[in-house]
Amino acid sequence: MEEQAKGPILNPNEMGLAHAGVAVENIASIGEYVELFKNAFPNEENPVSYDNIARAIGDFERTLTTPGRFDNYLSGDSAALKANEKKGLAVFIETGCSSCHKGALFGGGQFDKFGVFRPYQELTGSKALDTGRFEQTNKEDDRFVFKVAQLRNIERTYPYFHDGSVWKLDDAIRVMGEAQLGKKLAPDEVDAIWSFLKTLTGEVPVEARTLPMLPPASDTTCAPTPAERSYERRSSASHHQSCPGDPCAAGAGHPGARRGAQERRVQQGRTRSPRRGRARHGADLPHGRARRGCGGSLTDISADAIERHDEAATGAFVAVGLAGLAALANLVLGRQGRTPRWLTATTLVLALIASAWLGVTANLGGQIRHTEIHAAPTGPLDSMTLRIRQ
Image 1 (cartoon, one colour):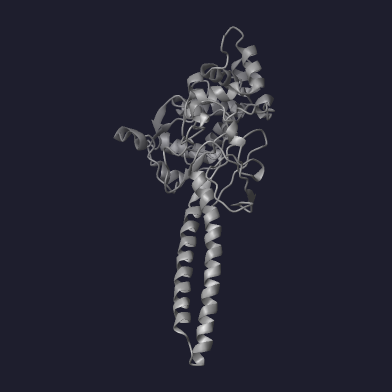
Image 2: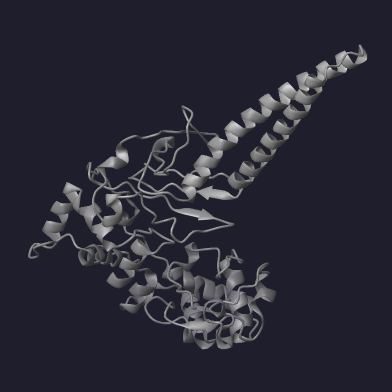
């Protein structure tokens, strides 16, 4: 579990930190965390380490267990399950469901083909065909192979299957009967299995549902880099690209992240600058504002494109207006038979300028429509998401 906890922190598709040192330095820059780590690991000279960060996360994740009535039944309380729930358990085992959905989590420990007896999409109505692990391995044996879902709290974790194509649990049970077991389960069998599966629902611990009050960052804490995603292009370097000499890239604090902040008001889904000039750095967007952070990214491209789009739209408006006035003057003077050549030439030039500005505006509008910006959270109740969509 500790090894798994380390993965998302450095994964470019998740938290995307450049290396483990960035996480360690950030935690070490927050005094309250330092004290907590000293208390948790009192015998270590340097308690704030990447291994200990993973250990702390792992210990917390191990508390996220949700025992239900079925666990009480296993512990010897025969009255914990009702008659139809016990029947459902028997049907679950006898029909073969337990051959894949087994173990403490009732699944989650193996990969199997989805659609052994019948193509799954014929039963689920899936619009997009997902070939499962085949997309990663290109091995024919992995076509339509997926990880077996665990059934703990299955009553509450709809919609079902890898593509969320089925919303009702009883419908999912029918699909599994035909696709995996080659059986059309009778209504009473579906109802019995459904009743049994509800006994796997447990209570989520209160501490897991309570938003913690995070300790405040210090002046040396590096500002978070927002996650970015583009539908048409994705730069592998954009997420970790740092400013020249940026201490965040080396895992040190970045007090300069707060200097020279250029704030933008976020209004009606767009970003507007309080003054002219382009922002060269994207950063977190707490409370409807953006400020400079540690590196350039698609966020920067989008924010810059928005400002240039506004400028181009203004230029196009002015150029079109002037071209219109010049054309009107040409029309009036032409009727009087005394149109000067310079006015005709001016009208043509203004029309060309207006066309150019309109082209730039349309191009920047296309960039904006195809870019999505996600702001990274900076604390409890202090995060927002800015999306610019078509």
